[in-house]
Length: 579
Ligand code: GLY
Image (cartoon, rainbow, N blue to C red):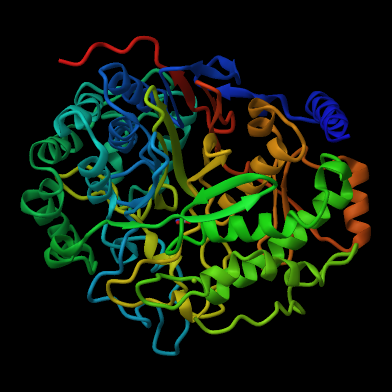
């Protein structure tokens, strides 16, 4: 019966993909030529990221005999060169590691509020939010965590020499990398910001003419910074010359990060958040990300319904997903924040019992976010990028990293060649006022010195019978959680292949605003009409997410990169014998 409904679902998705999908969405834009989305498979390891050069940096490390954690460090640094919109050394993120022995570790390298930060720092004398202060410029930056996080992962699990892992990024910065169409367009779009943020001109041609695909971008200052990191580890960033350059930049622009903040920054190891869904085990990022908690809460609720039998993109299945998302984003805003500062009722939020209470209010009609009344909890928290990696030994890595907004605060540290994040906007700058993703937060996520701002990043690993099955993640701010939910449902409930699941259109609801956002082509006219008749407000929007997925089948890993931005999956061919 289950097999039959899977078959029907597959047929439906194929018909939908053929007849209503935007063909551009199943062709990766990697330059002038569109490439078909396909799996790249190997028993020896797979890397999937948004950037071909970064993916190949990871493959190079795996082929040299490094493990998945070594490769993740190399990909992370390479992305800071080849995907400056979100890849970074001036931002932060979360790395989920599952070793071949089945040990799960989460490296939290989320940025922190500087010591001088306070709850009113983005408010005027009337207590109103000063527009853009938390999003643009020097005051928008938290203390970066990426270099500390990559180093911590390396210290625990890495096997090659540290400098060998930074070397591909140095080479890409020094010898340049070739921009594709999407990157050229994105970098040309920065021209309007040059007046306020002149450091962005490092991404322009000397003659200031627009970049075209094929242009080679050199980043000499960034190469020197990376070399300091290669030679000195985190000291090459959080102390010495790089720290001085950040300090000078902050003083120039009225920012708050000090040398002391940099010296004190520590990445930390946390227990991942874990749950079960229809016989699969879900492992993901715990607070200070809301990602894994919300993901598990939504899946727990959906497990109460036979979604597969309702059918892929059936009105009942879509309606239930929306209603569960609505309820969980309310919890996100009430309870989630940095666990080092607030008590989070985590075990209750991710319990099956709580999910059963939450779904009891769902009917077949649209709910209302303004009248939502989640059961009480006893007292006890879009521009990002993701990469997934497996190796020949059976280690897996799922990393999501970000500057927050595209190109972060837009501030390039003079003389150091890298962008700083605008992650302070992920705090609730004022209770009840939405951030750049429209997310409304409460006191659990209020600004405090040294606190980590709440994230939605959800690097995730799904296992079946204790064996890794999926390694998945995506950018997309508040849509990260709902994109991962959809990938899991599409594969587990609706029987889609990895290519279909990654390519198919997405929709999103986040409690407030009370709107169902969807990509072009997501809903048929009939489904749209049915949802509107139930009372849903639907709004078409730009593409959602950029999923980097690996599915493991026995000994073989198969990677698929989302066509929305045009990334690359690549598979290891030969591993050279270690010296
Ligand atoms: N800055 C986006 C996130 O952390 O969710």
